[in-house]
Image 1 (spheres, rainbow, N blue to C red):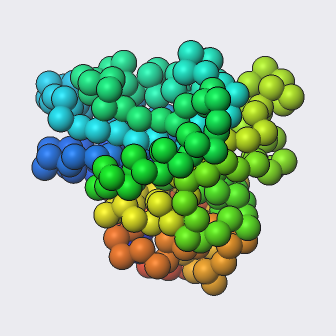
Image 2 (cartoon, helix red, strand yellow; image 1 turned 180 degrees about the horizontal axis):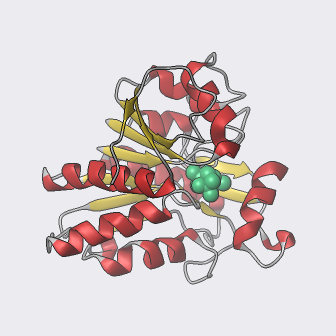
Length: 249
Ligand SMILES: O=P(O)(O)OC[C@H]1O[C@](O)(CO)[C@@H](O)[C@@H]1O
């Protein structure tokens, strides 16, 4: 694993934007995207670069990791709306080339199977990931099969509580999601994982240095040949492994 430490969240966002910007300039075809609090600064910085350079993304295809079951594409807490607000509305990717699972599909199981086929057919060049405090990636909670495919999953209480900050009330947080599986994620050519804050320090340490186990899904990334972790000092505070340091501003 290639580990890059940054001073803080702002530098993490800047370093990650620079990283993806290089890939976009060299004509990356399929970009896998993530949601959550962590990548918001990254999307902002990346958008700035794209627009400063008037760089067209009309040939780019994006696939998101997951979507809540029960939230339609127009629901303010859906990942569809998150992606519109933080990225898609600021760039020129044709909407028909931006994919997320449909949280309102009549059969979520069929939706997950169809999404799996889509992702496998497209093939992801670079997959962006965040990490849950319990080590989840996408919505693959502890106990998820390390070779699992896209499917319907139940969220843990911990994740429901963590994501309640985006909703008015915790009861409004959906209890299920469609997520790419860990096996699906592992087929991406390259993975870029972002982490910020002391609450992620144990998960980040386990991901980098712990034994590979379903109990901490992100540990499977040790088996991927091309993973870069960009994390701030707080998130790396319990990790011993050598890393390079992002100079920042
Ligand atoms: O970036 P956050 O908000 O801490 O979330 C971490 C992870 O949890 C999720 O939001 C799912 O709960 C992922 O999408 C994200 O990568």
